[in-house]
Each structure stands twice: as structure tokens, then as C-alpha cells.
Image 1 (tube, rainbow, N blue to C red):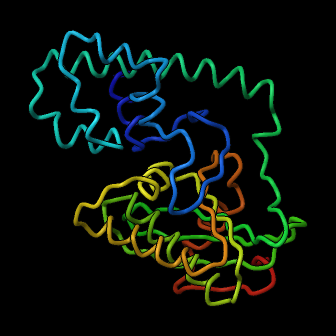
Image 2 (image 1 turned 90 degrees about the vertical axis):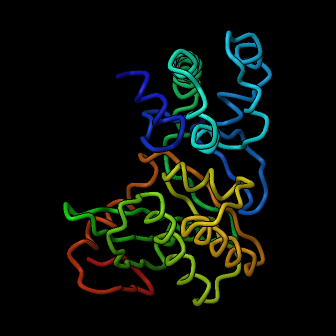
Image 3 (image 1 turned 135 degrees about the vertical axis):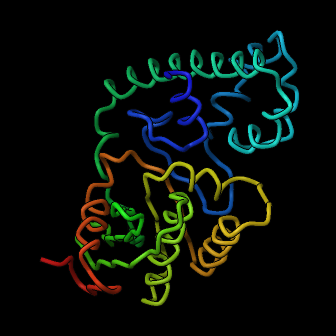
Length: 260
């Protein structure tokens, strides 16, 4: 079971407690950070594990996401190769988490929400779900002084794909910012898979991929725009907004504050 959980986390399907990196910022259309794929597969420090494995894992060079690699090649692997893959991921993940835990203890400020630099507005976004699968997105906008300058909520239909719902929630929130005339934007979310996909080179045809492309197109209309992954502990305001929005019957916008 623990090997299954690690595979899920490596693919971005389940959140990890610490994540592979406590905080980093990236351009919306440019890869500038250590992705999960790099940390677990491509990193020079662990490359020898895959090169010296008793099975052929050379196909990893053709992919940029673990989930993509598994979808394309896993059916071709035998039972023993799948087990070897899962076990290798598990021990690499455990070693990385141990290193990450030490880093967090040395730098506790990385577990706090950080004000954006002027003239940026920071948008924190999250999605909450009802038992029937329907969801809502919540967004909170704050300036360089940490003051809330607006909030937004929107309804999201049930889709049976949390990554797609997270992406749609982000797209709606960014649209609100763009319509409001903001020129410098930082977007933060704890949806790791969404951020990974936005910085990947995947071009497959799907509704999910189309949503990602539409997000990048909107981001390019800003003078400067960054999309970042953060820990859930740093995204509490958006999480609260999304949960409150579950009780709303329509999209809501608060131009100067959050709902009280």
C-alpha cells in the first residue's frame, strides 16, 4: 500500500506532507524549477539507480512527467518491472523527504504565506468539493502589504477529474484579475499536478490540456505573471474561500475585501 501511495504522490494525484520543495516561484511559460520528474527520475544524484536497474527504463528520457511516462509505457512492463519501479520511487521519495524535513526545520519561514513584491498582486486559489462531486473555486487577492484587495468564488460542475477542476478554478480566477486591469500577477496554488502540467511540454489533445493552454494564453497578456506551487499550509485563505463558496448558488466577486 505504501508503494501505491508514493506512486500516486509522484504522479501528483495525492498531496505529500512536505512536498519535494517547500517554496519556489516560476514563470508561467518557462521551466525554472525542480519538477517531481527531475527530482525522482532525472536528477544526476539518483540517475545511476535507473541506469543500473535490472530492467530497461530508458524510455524515461522521452517524457517530462511521471504520470505521462506511466500512462505510455506501464502496460508494456511485466509485473516484476512495475514492482521494481514502485520500490525505486518509494526509496528515492523517502530519502528526499528526509532531506526536505531537515531543510524545513532549518528554514521554518518557508511554511508561511509571503507578501508579493511591489507592484505585484498575489492570487491564492483553491478548489473545494461537495460529496456529489460538484465544486467551487475560491480566490483571494492581496497586495505587497499583505492587504486583501479582493476575493472571488465560482461554481465548478462535477467532472470526476480534480486536476481539471483545479485548472478551471485557476483559469476563472485569473480571468477576473485580468478583467480588473491588474498588470503584475503572482498565482499560488497547492495543486502540484496543475503547476507541473503548466510547466511541462505535454501537447496531448484533451480538455485538460486545452484548459492549461488557455491559462498560459491569459498569463501572457499580463506584463509579468508567475505561477507557483505552495504547501497547503500556505494556502489557507484560498482553501477557506473555496469551502465557503460551496454554499453559494452563483459566482461571486468582492472588489475590495473578502466576505464577512
